Image 1 (cartoon, rainbow, N blue to C red):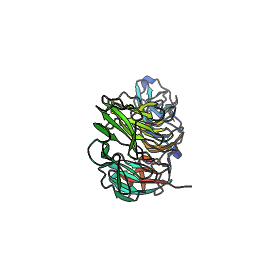
Image 2 (cartoon, helix red, strand yellow):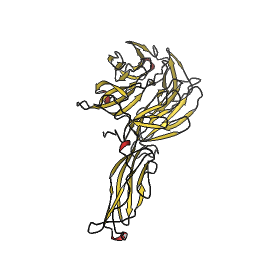
Image 3 (cartoon, rainbow, N blue to C red):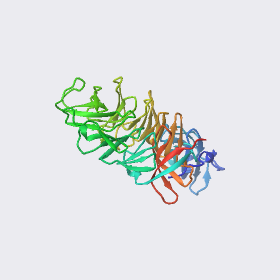
Image 4 (cartoon, rainbow, N blue to C red):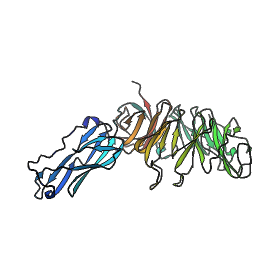
Length: 415
């Protein structure tokens, strides 16, 4: 990945003009070109493109171009070829003179953070694990191994598959391959506590994926023959919330979806666990109020009701307007950050993820790149996945000594 160190310092405004001494009819122009043909521009800054026109014998001539941008929300261009960063992402700037055109590729990026985080290397291999989790205590969950405080690898004995880790270091496990209440347990310091001693209801299937900091486990029953005052029969996917072996029923039918995440305010994210193009959406269900909100697929929710939405997994060709766009979900709006994924959020509403231009951190109105954020300059950060309430970031990085795609924990260095 290209380093962006010193980008801001290199944005020298050039004069977009020709050094020709003779004006000419556009019809006699044989070729035009732009320089540079590719530029990086920090959002809010500007950089000029220089147009050069030549006649049939190669002599430079004056030319007035019509300037166009392929993505006005990303990059604007003036009548003199000055490109201004409007939003994060990529655009193509085109200059047209008569029947001739020339293009320049533009990447609108963010100013980098340098030497702001120490690096704890967890090694190679973990970067290939789907669903890695970072807890507030610095624990990293990957497959059936828990890296306690990022250092000591602990095997989750008896845990067939690990699904979630909370801020207490407790892990939600599925202990066998069956879809039933008794197939789930919480793990803590080597002890497995079943969600229920046995199936307490006549449910054909039960699935759970999330664990809150208060050890609540939201899950879904598929009930073809079971009726309950809060759970309609006839095959409903009925939400239940388990704690200390006891279930409550908020009265929500998730249809064909699953409860994938829950924050500590009992707001759950409803999605299809194995996503398909036919259902590229999320629903946030607020258990205390019963309200719902429909959003693009891939919501990670914090306790304030804010979310990071990683929607690049929406299949190619989908009509979803947010395809391949990293989004911030505030209580009132969606904010686009550019092409890529927003994958982590903490309770300070700080978001991390990876855009086309590199791994980033977003703090309200400002975004910065994490490419060179390590205090050790031998590390280059290539991806950012999660951020906890201590500001630690679960990321992927390369080292100049040959270590590639290592999972690391970035810990902020206090000024």
